[in-house]
Amino acid sequence: MTGRGARALAAIAAGNALEFYDFLIFQTFAIQIGAAFFPKYDAYGQLLWALATFGVGFLTRPLGSVVIGRFGDRVGRRPAMLLSFALTGLAMAGLALTPAYASIGIAAPLLAMLLRLVQGFALGGEVGPSTALMIETAPADRRGFYIAFQHATQYAAILLSGLVGLVLAHLLSPAALAGIGWRIAFLLGAAAVPYGYWLRRGLTETLPEPAPPPPVTAGHARVALTGLFLLAATSISIYVVIYMSTYAIRTLGFAPGSAFVATVASGIAGFVCALLGGRLSDRIGRKRVMGASALALFLLVLPAFAAVNAWRTPAALLATSGLLGGLLGLCGPPVLASIAEGLPPGLRGTGLGLVYALANAIFGGTAQFIVTWLIHVTGSPLAPAWYMMAALAVGLAAVALARETAPARIRSGA
Image (cartoon, rainbow, N blue to C red):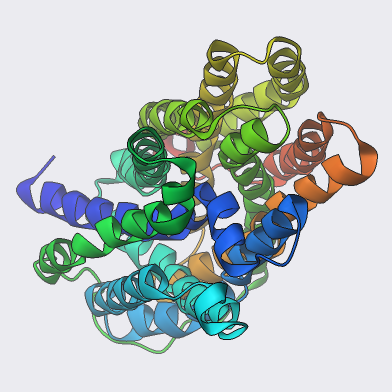
């Protein structure tokens, strides 16, 4: 890896991890945030409203992908990434300092929702330009590995949010965790913003020169549509796996200190397997890695949920979260690589960002709300597994329709 490539990966990885940490820490502390902003409801209502507020952040992700992504395709990848990062820091600090409902009434949840909209806008504009910069920095035979850092840093954010939750849950009483603990988690992220911003300012621009966007062809539309279904499957699956800590508390009866181990396990396994999945996709092809990992998830998710419900031990929770997180880690990088390689540079930032944002807004952002509701109305603790299996069935169909884009496979005629 060249010095330029290593610097680019470090800058993108640090910023991307922080942006996703900011976005995901809200879900990690959904129970505590629900109690702070929606105290008039019972525990179920508080959680549902907190998850709805979490989902609000997905509404502006498509808008951010178009506005900041187009900015990145016309002006440059680096300024677009700096803009999204600055907005993330603003929203992160704002949420940490938002007073509870007991202090300012209905203004509290409204302000939280507004800041979530800013977060969503910023994150929606992050993925396209940063992935475009990665693929434009990488050697052709290592694109999957470079793009894997995009996905791996998301798992690093999951791991970090789980570790923060785990430490705070052990240091603070339940009352203190609900009162100030979740705010500390947001402030820790905000404190790292200046360092990440400094790293990104030193990036080398990869967009050759400002140019009008190329015309959209039927081939581009096929890449986008197939990518939308692939990302829908992975988005639902990821947010179901991230939900495991909340699921362990609400459905399985775990204490928060034990439940957060689920987030840590899926974060570690996902990070390692994302890098492996990216490198494997460079060698044996995007479709093979996507297909094998999605099929394994489809076959194993129901037995995994059944096992953790039967045993209800921290070891079972850790094993289930690690298994599902690892398989998702394998699947994610080749999905992003196949979409990015299927689009020309002038459409790459906007196109990839928009498809990614739409998939997350429509499917990922609603996943946790839907599975919470499904558990409640069906009375079945296996409802999340069935929902995830339905999404994976769609994803497997999309893999069959996708075209192979790995340069090594194309050169070999496979």
